[in-house]
Length: 230
Image (cartoon, rainbow, N blue to C red; front, side, top):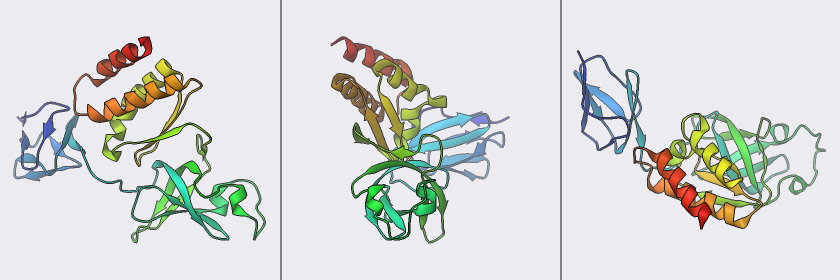
């Protein structure tokens, strides 16, 4: 019979024993040492059935295929845009993946996405040499107009989104803001009322600060109610 030594959402450190026996399976951030599951990094415990994994509390963004990210146009060539997604290498957005519209060879690409523009895009490929390919074709993928960009620690993104989008939907509902969250830790917020935009920003910063807490949804619900009443 297996024994679990921690609770879901506990914060653990490297070397800490999380479970004993073969009933539990190590996942991201953990490893097996004989019949024990050990933490390999600082993180928040996530227990899902028999799986035990850690959500890291720090660390840089590592691009993965399928991630939706928010990036800034940093450069362009005659056939591609190069997007800063907060990684060591810029990601490439080719003409064929940028738009369904036909673009003549030699056209001024800045008419579509100019230097400094922010875009919500998706990573479609990451090679072994860390070349990153992007697409703008898909639901919710677009050039960002107006609003503000907030940067958070990429590892805290799952807490900002919440289970099945519960946390981010709570903030949208209470503030009336339009919000997009990139897996790379950039969050776009746009509200019709500057006050509501500011409240949404504060709520996201509060989640980042308290990502380790249990009962975070209740905490943020109270926080939003208090800020809205001010």
